[in-house]
Image: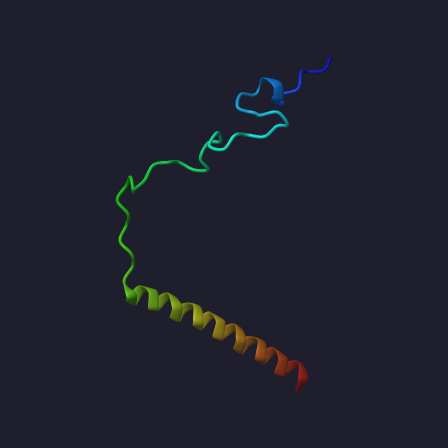
Length: 77
C-alpha cells in the first residue's frame, strides 16, 4: 500500500497563476518584517582587547612559520 504524495497539488495551491507562476507581491517576505532591535545589544570590546586578539593571532602564525622554516632547514641541511 502506498501513501499519498505529500507534495502540494498545483490546482489546489492558492495564489498560483496558470503555468505555476506567482503574482507580484503575492509571495511572503524573505525574513521577518520587524524593524529595530528587540533586545539590548552587548557593548563591543575595547580597542585594546581587539589589538590583543590580533597580536595573539600574529604570534601563532609567526610560531607556525618559524616551525615550518626550521623543519625545512632540518630536512635540507
